[in-house]
Amino acid sequence: MKNEVKVFAPATVANIACGFDIMGFAIDEPGDEVVIRTSGKPGVRITKISGDEGRLPLDAALNTAGKPLLSMVEKFGITCGIEMEIHKKMPLGSGLGSSAASAVAAAFALDRLLELDLPIKELLNFAIEGEQLASGSVHADNVAPCLYGGFVLIRSYEPLDIIKLDVPDELFCSVIHPQIEISTRESREILPSEISLSKAIRQWGNTAALVAGLLKSDYELIGRSLEDVVIEPVRSQLIPGFSDIKRAALESGALGCSISGSGPSVFALSKGAETAGKAGLAMQQSLLKHQLRSELYVSKINLNGPRIIELN
Ligand code: HSE
Image 1 (spheres, rainbow, N blue to C red):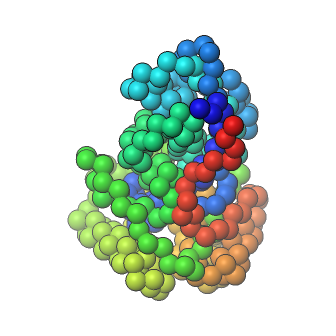
Image 2: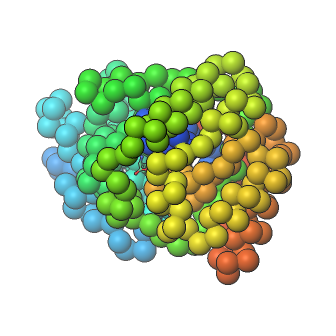
């Protein structure tokens, strides 16, 4: 039996414009890392957290990555002690699935270290517990793509029904992360609890067409479907210059552009790396006009999900 594992879990873009709470995809970077080791002292302890500016709790029961471990230890009667280091490599409240990445990394790492060999859906349920602690709601559109990799559709939450979708070869994502913070909890609170039938019809038309566009590798259809008439009009008010950023992406040739998760990150999908790079730079430039700097990440859809960096 090994006694230490280091795992990377990727950032994710949730909602993908029209698929609020039911769609997300993983990207190559950024991502979080956790190190998990066994110890002689029973219980789950978080020994170190870096990159969080001292904001995350060391108490495992209150920590997004600690909660899945506590549940796994209890469910499987794990008697050895578990120590964890969490290295946050992406900002909190970024809309890039930061809490999901930590929760997935922890659950995946413990599974691999102790050779539990759990079905992926069971791991997902443990990771969702961590995500729920962070955001106050059960939504799997960050944790599921983070764990499964690729482009993921959640058909149903009860029971959980996850579908991994095909991704066209030349689909690239550009994400900018403006240097402001938006809490998922708060940006969910401002959303309407009901929507009109006409908006619902438009939204589910787009959602269905986005899936069709992915399966047919029809880039134009993907672009037409990246429209959100429900969430974006409300949340975009929290992102300075959002409409300029979106215009800049589309004028650079991106297929579509919207808010990543609960924001403030903004993503665009493009056909080809070159267009994705151009769109990303144009989005950054546009944000600068609003006196805000940002980080830019350009990648293909990450088909792999979490990965082991070291196992000793
Ligand atoms: N679907 C969630 C939301 C994702 O938009 O609130 C949060 O990253």
